[in-house]
Image 1 (tube, rainbow, N blue to C red):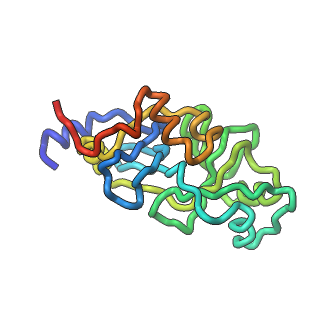
Image 2 (cartoon, helix red, strand yellow):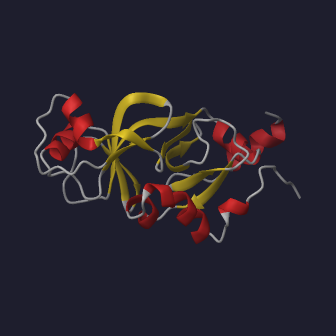
Image 3 (cartoon, rainbow, N blue to C red):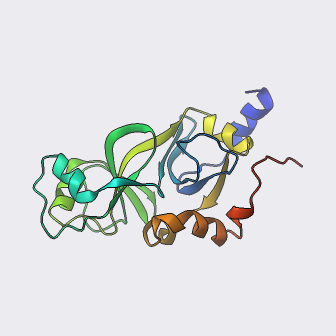
Amino acid sequence: MNDDTRDNVQETTCLTGQLLVAMPGLLDPNFSGTLSLICEHSKDGAIAFIINQPLNIGLKSVLAQTGLSVDESVEDRPVLSGGPVSVERGFVMHRPGQHIWNSSMSISDSIDITTSDDVIQAMAENRGPDDAVLILGYSGWAPGQLEQEILENSWLTLPSTPNVVFDTDFDQRLKLATSSAGIDFERMSTGAGHA
């Protein structure tokens, strides 16, 4: 990273709560066609969760694998692959509510991430948070890495909305996020352009 890039990286606005769109030219198979929510961004790096890649396993199966007794009324919703880091670790993305969980982080006014066992127990008993989705794994970047990749046209950042995160089918999230910003993702070039 040259000095000019380093200066630009240091001046970058905090991207926490923004959506991260993998550009067509990004060749990493872990991220091709992904839409992620940036949950933490600071001088120490960035963490995001992919929000449009369901796994071939349902919530009931994952809850049962933890050894919990799963209430028969629990809906067998999809579980998401959040990224290639710590794929055995679970995170629950949900709307904020009146219940206070042991370990939650507010991403925005309408999105929380909870990592504590009490939320998993509540989901197994069908009394978990509203619009909760279980995510296995996450995506992470070292200090300055995400900023550099954005400068290299690997990623596009967009504002997030609860509609995209909670109310849209997984296979439609990328299209909705980009079209809401006036972008036709299908027509985007795979090459970077600089003015």
